[in-house]
Image (tube, rainbow, N blue to C red; front, side, top):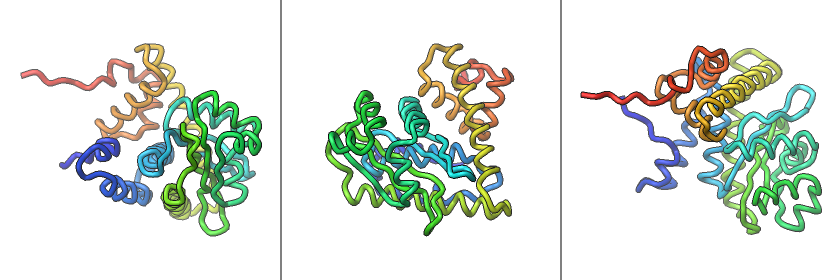
Length: 257
């Protein structure tokens, strides 16, 4: 079986941006599968946002049935914490993009004026430009994709268009998956995502404690093990959290002649 390369590997290859874009479209439309993993699906969206939309970091929030936003995926642990601060403070680009179902962005002083609580926190982490596009289908907004950049240079129209296109595809995929399950609301899917996120955070904490890794390194180790063993990310995280898997089990095995 041919091994599908990681997006970052493609981005550095001679195939370049066109190959990454083609793979992004293929993966973001592949929601009608037997074991659909919403956390992994949205993590891929953040990965492609960084690779294709000019962002240094990205995050995704989804709304529950009451319209409250929850952090579901992020490109780094640092971004996840910033997204949590944004949601808890009820202020920031993701909330504005979700509510208006439209792209928003600001840099430097303009960002500080528009989001006086969120922007300074982003500045402290080195991000100068912040933007967001909605995950929406027509008038139905179900979340938002946050884009962060260390430069004060605004995202170009092309970059925002690319991000919006990927977010729209992701929204369609989530809504199709919901329809397939004959569900009128995203509540069950969101609850599963939130429960899955808890298992993943517990698993990351266990690996950090056992191996002395950073949270980002621990998450990547878990992801690679899930890919290598063709298991769901959440299933692996649950096994780690319940101590059925240890850090030693995650390390790639080297076959010796």
